Amino acid sequence: MTRGRSRDQAIEAPSARAGAADSAGETAGRAAVRRGQAEQREGRVAAGLSELERWLADQIGQGIAQARQTGPAGWDDLARRLVDAQAPGVAGIVTRLPRVLGAEDWPGLLLGEYALLHLLAVAHRRADALPGPLRQTVRTRVGFPVTRESVLAGPVVRDHWDVVGCRDEEQERLVARRMWLAGRATGRPAMVLSFSPVGQPPESFPPPGTTIDADLAFYPGASPLRALVAVRHGDVEAGPPPGTEISLVPALIAEVLAADPWTDSWPLVLAGVVPCPDGLADGAGADGAGVDSEGPCGAGAHGAGVVTEGPDRAGADRAGIDSDGTGGAGAVLAPHLPLHPAVGVPWRLLAVSGGRPVTVAAEWTPRGLLPLTVWDEEGEVVRL
Image (cartoon, rainbow, N blue to C red; front, side):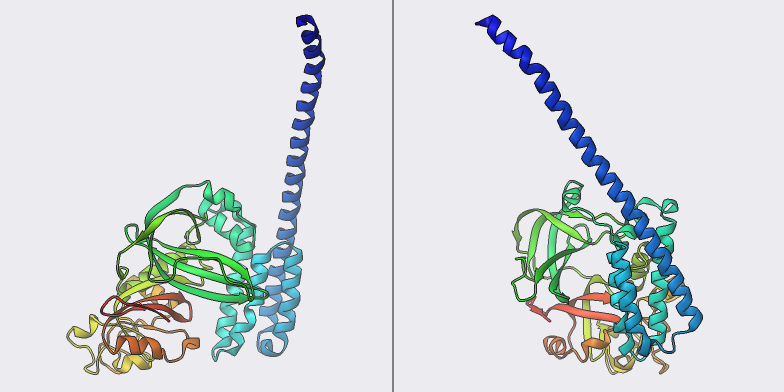
C-alpha cells in the first residue's frame, strides 16, 4: 500500500508542478496585459492633452469675444475628444465652462479657466519633475483612478470628526453628495464623496451637527481632502465645532492653492461671524476701535473686504476677498467674506443669527462662500 501511494504521489507531483507553472504563467500574462493597457492609456492621455494645449493656443490667438455664441458647441466637441483620450477629469472641467458665461465678468473668468486647463496639461507633460504629492494631484485631476482598496490600505487619521455640512450636485444621471467634516484634534478638513442615481436615496451618512469618532483614510495628493471612513467607532456628544477667524482665511486659502492650484472648493468653519445680506462679517472685529458704527456689516454689506496687509494680500485676492480694508468709504470695517452670487440674500441664515455672532460652516469657492450649516448662540444646528 505504501509503495502504491508513493507511485501515485510521484505521478501527481509533476501534474501539481505543471499546474503551478500554468497558474504563474497566467498571472504573469495578466500583469503584462495590464501593463500594456496602462502604457496605452498613458499614450492616449498625453496625446489628448497635447491637443488641448494646441486648442487653447488657438482660442487665445483668435480671442474670446464670440465665446458666448460659439463656445458651448466647441467645448462639447473638445470634451468628447478628451473622454476618448481617457482624460475624464479634464473633460469634466471643460463641460463646466458654460457656467461662467452667465456672469457679468465672464471674460476674466473664462481666461482664468483656460489658464488652469493649460497649467494642468503642462503639469502632466512635466510630471516627472514634480514632487510626488503634486504629481499624484495632477494625475487625479486628469482622471487617473485611485482604487478604494489602495486608499484603505494606507495610513488612517483617527479623530472626533464634526459633520459640518452636506451638498448635493446633479451630474448627468448621478447625484454627487459631498459630506464635509472637520477634525477636532487635528484641525484637518475632509470630504466624503458618494454617488447615487437620480431619484434614488443617497448613501447613508450622519447628518450635519453630528460628531463621529472615526478613522479616515485620505486619498493621496498635495492637499489631501477626499477621504473614506475606514472605521467608525461611534458618535460623540461634542456641541458646535471649533471655528477659525475670518481674518485667517486668506492665508489658509493661499496655502491650499499653492499646493493644489486647481482647488475649486474647500470647507471652512467660521466662529463668531455675523451674517450680512451679501457676506459674513467678523463679529469680534466689530467691537474694535474705528469700526463703522453701523455694525459689523455696515457699508461692508455692499462690498467691503477683509483687512489684510503684506504677503497675505495675493491670497486674499484669489480667495475672493478685497484687501484694502477701507470698503471705499474711508472707515475701517470688520473683516468680511463675500457670498457666492448664486446664494442671493441668505434669509434663513440672517434669521437664525438675528444680528448676533454665530458659527457658520461654509464651502469656499473662488467666487465666494456657499453657506452650509449654522449653529446659533445655544448650539442648535440649522442646515441651510
